[in-house]
Image (cartoon, one colour):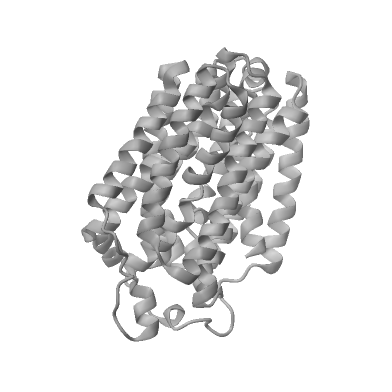
Length: 398
């Protein structure tokens, strides 16, 4: 779990590298803000292109998939470093790093199921999922501290490349697909063939609705992370302040997700946590937008943290709910559909918010509010825990 989490952490930190210092990045590479946004959006495009082939690879060769992801993460990092101030080559390196993402972003539920007991699984899924967001957090605070002038970008990217190389060594030395003895009955159940699993996911209406809601909410968190500096710049916020806002947004989400992962492991109340997370996020996004545009700093910092607690803390709940709803479909396949929805909506919402400029935060709020409404109107108040029922040998709904 530790080596996988470090890989996810490293990959996410490289994704968000340019967002908190986009103004300096435009000077370093000699391009517009829209071009810098593509350092982030290319990840979403690559995921949408590669998600099915990567799902097939992980379904059949899970260990090789993680090792391949690790190698792509390192190679892309060093291409970015070698690119210097060449925007085209830096984007090539960012694209290579982004190709690592579909092979491991969907893996947390599968890693948790392979290695942990039923009472530990939800918490392990939360840790593996939130390690990616921890990379966001560090990616928000370190670049503003390191990058004061365009020339200092080299130091930042070198540091990320060295760290990615160390993580690669750690993964190859310690990561294994599964322990010698299965930790639970569900871990020994033969999963459906890949093609049949994809068809069954598309037929599962509850899971499809969860995918749409997850796409709206996580896609909005991608948009906020990518566009935060452009939201805040016109209102006089400095680079370090914006980095602190991003750190607060992600850190509160990590704490919230860890707590909710622990709660899920004991009470299995997926539906209520999902609905409450959406509603909570909508309220604090409204306050965030008002505080940002009226320069009310105390309210801005509080609302940023609490919005992150809802938007990011929701992610491990969704992964666990998707696995329970779709069992015995492979955990990687169900997670893949959630993340594909998030990448698609993330691309759309990021483009819309970039186009709207100062008013982009209102668009994010509207999308999350729509998810809250959908969840209360159409998402069932109970979750069918099929994996848990399989282990208990009986059928009941929580």
